[in-house]
Image 1 (cartoon, rainbow, N blue to C red):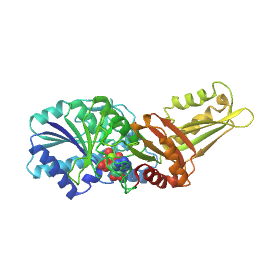
Image 2 (image 1 turned 90 degrees about the vertical axis):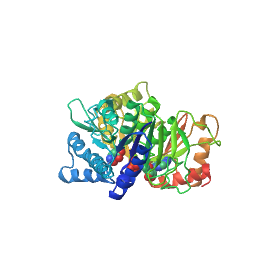
Image 3 (image 1 turned 180 degrees about the vertical axis):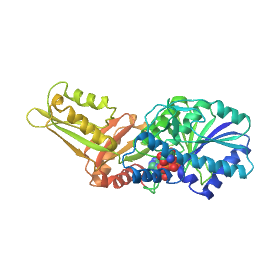
Length: 402
Ligand code: ADP
Ligand code: ASP
Ligand code: MG
């Protein structure tokens, strides 16, 4: 079998952990498998590099920032290769450039175009273990790019897809995907299986256990994906197209996202075309809008509120102020002390009252809901961010009794 294994930052944080992971890789290699391994930077290295950059220049260019951030992964792969060498395994470490990981030029959040599999195949043919730096690629100028925080998962899935690997295993510091973050909700349950669609919603709504683009790609290419622990040797969570429901689960999980800001465009004339002008202006700047709410204001005007990622908040505000005359609003209110809490579950389409149960949990906990949005398999609410953990616990208790 051809197996792609990815190990996150905490799994390779120090020498002892590198040795433990090398043991897992060696075990699979000894079983006769072709092994491709993707690594993240050790521990908090990426955050530390960001701090280092800020000390020198608080607003560095994104190109130079990527040049710096990509170094973390290079340290990990070299150390892992050295560890396996010491154990007498044939091994080679490769950077994104060396495997032809081509991306667009969006530094800090680059999209993968293609991977040239030649080098990897040649190394595998020599029965070498191939260790690849996650999170990084190169653009058409041959400059280094990075795929966005948590992007090593996406590297692993992209390589698994390109090589038609039999399995893609994401090893991390928890035993799989849970009904909520197990570090925040002690009663959270591990899921044996979850669908690509549910996992994509959970990841997009803030469950950091998988990078959302890795799930999108796994679905598109039908990658056989599993999330499992690098500490405890037992089956994790399989992410796949359809799952067999052992018991009727109304929802699969709860996620929260603090990277949210709410903008309220106040005093928009109640006429056709005004909402269009607001959201076209934002779309032209590639700013993603999530929950939208329109309510009646005074004197034939509406207030249009919506959420964007907090990182996009300044740009969204500037963009709308530039278009103030065309849109015709009075002013903009901005809030960042908000958080989005979401429940996700494919079972929602089949049962009624799921949203009501979520709102009941929030009502019991005396948490006020500012905005609501729903899709076929998701309900999200916007609440004050200080109540985020309390809300997740209360909702979990209501649905899972723990
Ligand atoms: P890695 O460094 O291995 O990439 P991450 O920190 O990116 O690990 O992701 C693993 C973390 O995701 C866990 O430690 C856990 O706290 C968090 N997490 C959030 N939501 C969930 C969830 N629903 N199931 C499992 N883990 C979750
Ligand atoms: N090292 C990068 C980060 O911390 C990528 C990753 O870990 O997946 O975001
Ligand atoms: Mg991660």
